[in-house]
Length: 234
Image (cartoon, rainbow, N blue to C red; front, side):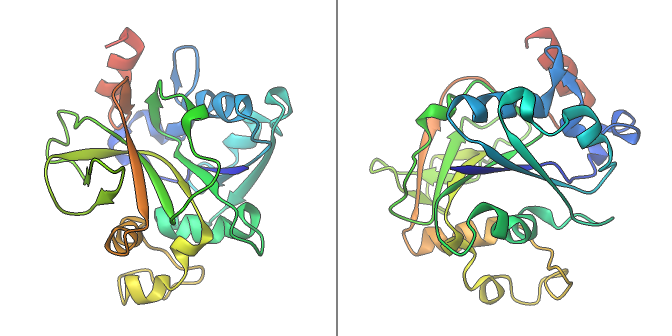
């Protein structure tokens, strides 16, 4: 199984810290945020990890090397000076993740901190996406999606949970992406730039999105204050 770590964002809300350091390379608990994910991926047998980059891209190979220290092969995929967002980034990385097939792959936001056990992630999917959801944090009280008693995820319904940024996907999720994205800004760029959320909602409408509720620790390290709280163990 292969994996993608999203690491291309500007990290604007983390400034001034991200003026000189990409957000996934900010240190928490003695190591860069992204390193915690790489360790977990290696522990469950993942060997190839794509790291998409844009802002301060040259720092990633400088800090992480080729991945051999974790038994990984890191593939740094530079998206250019403007990041492709989550959907465009996944589409751009798809040849490295699934090749010509439809084998499931893992994708993780590089700027989260979480004690979720990656060994719980499914190695096969009956649908197109499996999402790890968490309790709504104070900064996102409205949540994102509803998880029903059968493990299906829905765009509507209550109570809602927040998408953790951890999921398993198949290439089929991205099939027909143009029909879903339409003429949204960036869709006509080359390579295209678009968010993943509309594709996830389309999968939910097809009843091909499953999920689970992680009730442990999770932080979207989106501001210097949250990083400081994480360092304090808050």
